[in-house]
Length: 109
Image 1 (cartoon, rainbow, N blue to C red):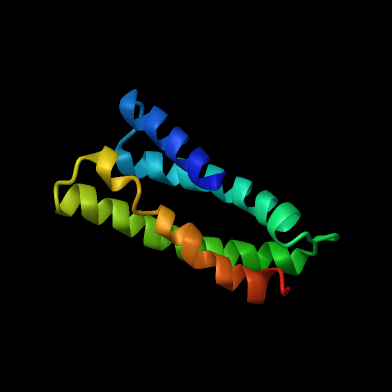
Image 2 (spheres, rainbow, N blue to C red):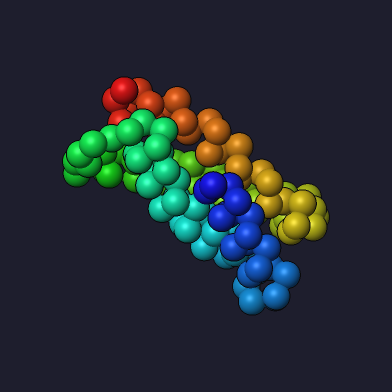
């Protein structure tokens, strides 16, 4: 779901020429991050009670993932001349890579 949200928000922003691709990716990433936290805590890991520690650990994981995401879109579009629409799938690998970290560190299942 977070991937669909990311893709939709980023495409709307880029295709409407509202903001540059990197800014669109940042906005879409933040939106997807909220959706991802809700989805992972409620459905994937079935957390009954949230703690401040979970939120802090999730934010740490997400900020690290954000920088990987930001760098990948920047490199693809600014350095390698990839059209923004093709650079968008790059950050989505972060959501998949982050899942094991969330399981063992953030939500501790």
